[in-house]
Length: 65
Image 1 (cartoon, rainbow, N blue to C red):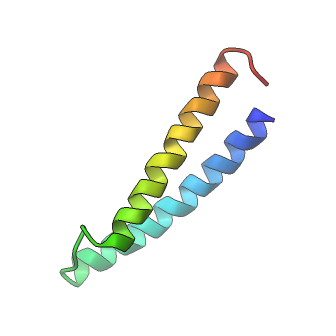
Image 2: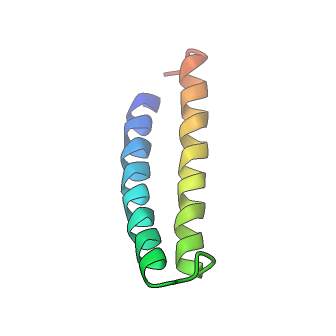
């Protein structure tokens, strides 16, 4: 169960990173604002997903399935 969750989290993180990278490129090219709500939301989403992944990995390393 946790290993399946890990795979899903890794997929979501990759997808969110791609989205954030596209936003960041647009911000840089068009002199945008890295403090925009939309960009901050995707950053927060990535941080939350990465925390979840770290917790899942910790539980797996402790022998939980």
